Image (cartoon, rainbow over the protein chains, first blue to last red):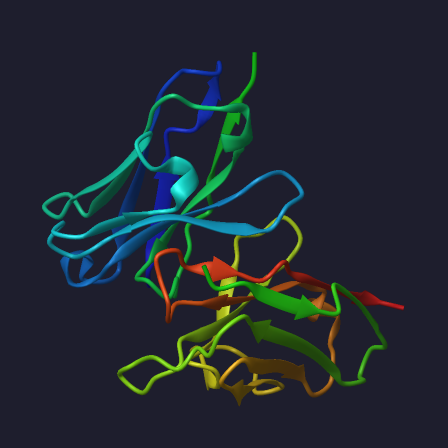
Length: 115
Length: 113
């Protein structure tokens, strides 16, 4: 069974940093693109970033370029999202998803950016 | 960026009756490889999203056959043949043909009358 477990969310002040993690199991992690998708409170889904199997390609939504970095450790079956210069409008539940078509999702981790 | 527009945004339904959600894209979603990367997701209250349909009409494992997807080009539809209580949710379409960015529709809230 595919499982994705996110962690690392929390409360931070504007301008602060957080690092999210996602640990995967139940499938061959290093054979799949991986994605981050977020959902602001009461709002819809927004794709944030994704990364190719070997890390050679990474893509971001414009609003996070230069502030967020997606990375992965295939030996640990782990996906990361380093978030710097956080803004109030980054407040959301962040989901890890398998592949570019988001075939499976984790339970999400809440990031709150507030002064 | 490809804009995905869903309608209606709210869909009151009657138990056992059919339901239909439309999703339109601002440009054709046919990829140069011949595939159309249009997916549908269900998000029940308090839960993570779950993919129901990929590449327009292929149902994911475990998805009841009352759910079906259809369409082509810029016009797509998710249909539920007979709505059940567990179908109360928000439904999203998503395109992964022209990216980055991958884009979602605004969501359609399905609830009972």
